[in-house]
Image 1 (cartoon, helix red, strand yellow):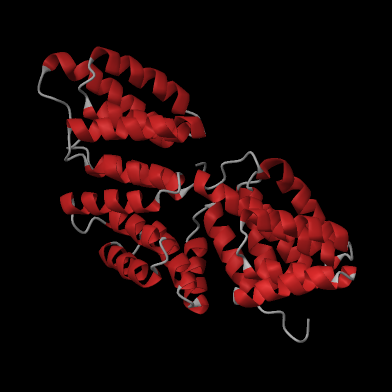
Image 2 (image 1 turned 90 degrees about the vertical axis):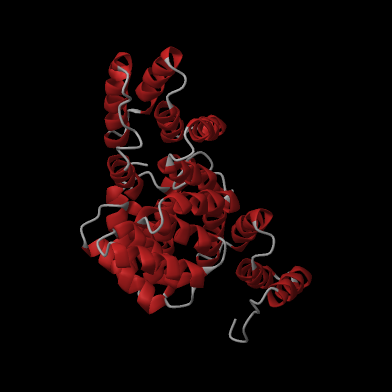
Length: 358
């Protein structure tokens, strides 16, 4: 992921586990180890090195298929390639690395990342817990396990793990970023914003941090701040549709409807095709796109268009109460009392009733 914390993390873990990836004693394998070191350095420091790394690692494994670190690097390269079709290959190579050397804790970290990409969060947790059995207290593993617990709807446990990671390394920005997300999920928006602000103010040029902070600002009603930080985020990664969708939301809240529509137009071609943060996030991005398109259309008085977009959103997340609530309001504007009542009842059942003012 271009410009992400992950690239930095991979470099740190490789260096920290150099002994696990060390050169074997046999002199006839020294050349292969030198090649592995070069390809690893390229893979972790270049954003365009995945395909070349895959070719080189396959050549190395053709000579010596017993090199656990080569299988591990090949799994990482498959993931870095960005193709969903290669995720199964990534899992297989990382599994092979662990079958050859079960002490290779970094392979479990990368395997957890792949499982998170695929939405297999329980499997990611299993791998991280197994890794921590080998390297107790390791902050990178604690941090990712904390975020995994957050995704499993356990924010209290997530906060505990992330504070452990930061106690070991207070400068660990990835853990601080994850902590901000966990605090937000735990209903502590003020503390969440403070953590996310610390990440952004550190100078980390990571689009995810700007997206999360901008979204938190909007949710807190700090629309001008959200608009500013989200705009800055698009300069870090102009291709991210989730950034564009949140920026469209900010413009809509400011009633700058043409600007909001322009952001959605930029996001639209990539909503169905981009990987964005990970493969598992893609349905959520598509859902957010349709919701924002519907709300923008409703704000402009285009209620038929709004109804179509909101119905598309509900096809992806049928039990999303706020969307049923908004669709009820749209049908009321269209004069369809029957459908308005149906969606209002559904919204109420899901905990998002239509308020008297609406």
